[in-house]
Image 1 (cartoon, rainbow, N blue to C red):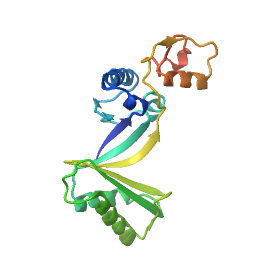
Image 2: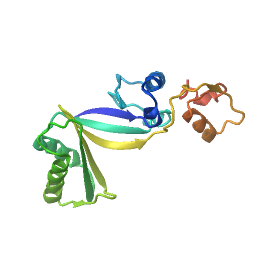
Image 3: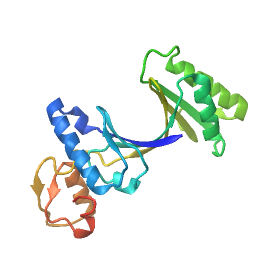
Length: 202
């Protein structure tokens, strides 16, 4: 299965269309300067990266609220999705699991709940695992699109806030990491940033 990374916004998404586009451009510029990705695609609700990059760097980039590591299943029917899920869970240690499904294309001949029920029953009966929808050992999160399905393997919390250097410049008198983090989250460029952090905030 092909791997991609999805970067989601929070505050940026609340802005007007014109402001949001400008801020997306700032965020894209920042990403291109600090990560080595084969391809970066800007979508309406998120940014898609087509190869794995350093997650520690992604977690430090303001404007990103969530980082999702995904696998693409080249199928939209339940049986073929299940075949890929079964391969994916083979070498995973877990006693409890939960299934969550979102349909991003509404013309499929099934509902999200149908997929959750069928996959949940198969894991329970064939692998003798228990369902836990509160705090399972393993979440199986699926988003079903028109031509493929995304399996969300991992969700990592991002820094959030506004894109770097989108709100102006400032200087700091006391270079604490907490202070720097809070300032860059507000979209500020720090002129006298310690040199060891300049690779993150160029």
